[in-house]
Amino acid sequence: MRWTLPNILTVLRLAAAPLVPLMFFFLSRPFADFAALALFLIAAVTDWFDGYLARAWGQESRFGAAMDPIADKAMVIIAVVVITGYSGMNPWLILPATVILFREVFVSGLREFLGDKARLLKVTKLAKWKTTAQMVAIAVLFLGTGLNYYETGHPPLVGETSLPWSDSWSDLATQAGLALIWIAAVLTAITGWDYFAKARPFLRDDHGA
Image (tube, rainbow, N blue to C red; front, side, top):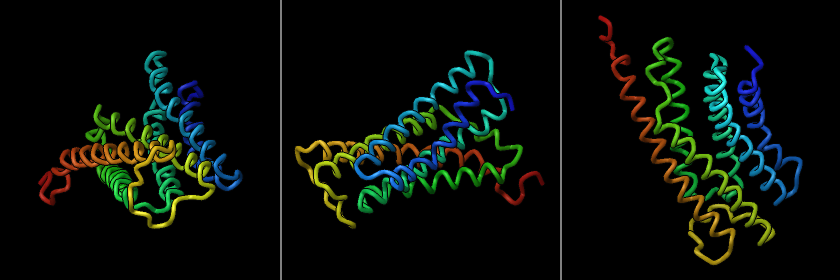
């Protein structure tokens, strides 16, 4: 591995993923929510920069190609788990979160099974939009949980199923985040099915016979 700036940014983003839940371990709320939001936004920005710089400077590498999607998935999955817990296990969030988590595990399993044929599942433009939608939704949801705790002094009630339409900033951020996470979940499901369709011929028992 060459320690180019794009690769360094990728490694830093990968290291930042487990720091998101640690914000809630070391900091009190709502400071933990806002610190996690800042960390997530920085990671999202570096996600764009490392790819752009690698292409612009001719520093694309196998390490970057392998670690970049892993860093994205680690950041998204860990953040989704944290937000789901701190949002009071809201079913309106649990369902799209389940779709996102299932798809990431499913596609990773397909790539592992295909081995050297995994290049057939290369990242598509729609998949990039999916990742962008996920990151924007997660950032807005972090803003919503932080504002909610700041305004009320406590997290949402566990199992709360209603959509509290009101004029508060926390509700506005939360509802926007929920809408975005559902959009992201739909894109996630579509890209997951696209990858499955491409891999399906290689899953047949008579393939290559």
